[in-house]
Amino acid sequence: MTNIKRTMHTMRGAAARTGLSGLQAGLLGAGLGLAASFLYVRAKTRQAEADNPPQGRFVTVDGVRLHYIERGSGPALVLLHGNGVLANDFEHSGLLDKAGAHYRTIAFDRPGFGYSERPRGTLWTPQAQARLLHHALQRLGVESAIVVGHSWGTLVALSMALEVPDFVRGVVLLSGYYYPSMRLDAPLLAGPAIPVVGDVLRYTVSPLVGRMLWRPVTRKAFAPLPVDTRFRALSPWMALRPGQLRAAAAETALMVPAAAALARRYPELKVPATIVAGTQDRVVDFGHNSERLHERLPASELQLQPGVGHMTHYAHPDKVMAAIDAIAAQVGEPVHLRDPKAEALARASESGT
Image (cartoon, rainbow, N blue to C red; front, side, top):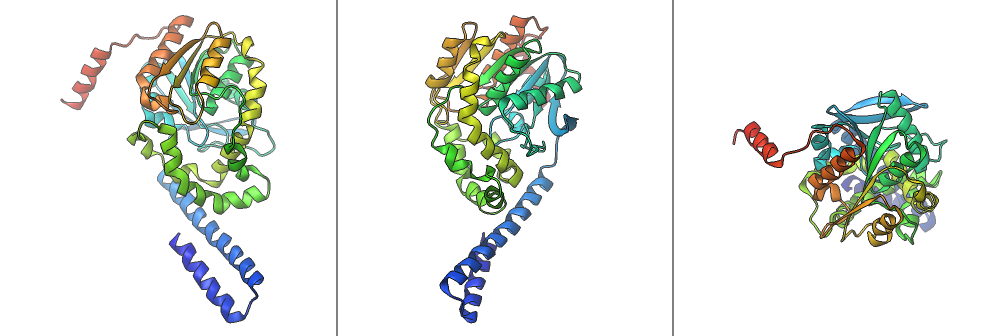
């Protein structure tokens, strides 16, 4: 930011010396400001990727290269992250490693996030993502799986369960947005997805604005709890790279129509579903969404987390694991039952305490 201010100061001095009109100086200043922002964003993006290289593997399916992180062995479990973050969000929360103790756990960078591609020729609805990820899982030798989705990822999990119910054994839905509602943030945050204008924004202004808003946005996601220290391991500039901003903006714009399209199909859901929500979620209203979905799915189970906000997998990862295990037991997966006391003793032994 200091370099941008220095460039703007130099530009104003140059304009004064050359006798440019106010309009000409303004246009020149805007152009130089965008150029300086572009260089700054490019440098921060390169540094973020150098500091955070891919930690998983890649699979190419239907012409799209996807990045995924895998842990453990056993019955297959798929983790689908929300908007704006990466697959490693599940790693930071501890859920990935907990699940990997008893499941073959696969966390995807959804299209456009992390190190996964998002071709521009496709409208990446939840259904389109579900088809792509289902094909990727088949390529990885997965014949069936329990699917966990958080926030926007719940729409993809539900789409997969509706499209391929013989493949999806059950779903665990965390802090989901299931029914359309007024979202004033949608038009405000969709700018980087607009062709041409959005391309300019996401390579220049949008990452800078996003960095200034990073703390209040993350505080809102975790509120009323403080931002979890583990979440701070996520690099803001990885989430603010131009490509990821385009994906996040597109999903913000798609959120309401995607929920409206899926809502008509919820009665068709044939697989077990556990719905988890924080009662003080400031991002998604749990009453309008989670409680309502539970009422319309007779076979579902609703688990409310009092005093918890949007990031349920950080607040109570053990409860999320219990929900996964309950689905596994319901569908007959051979899951090793956890003994919390034995696991605590094992952790103490490993740490030497």
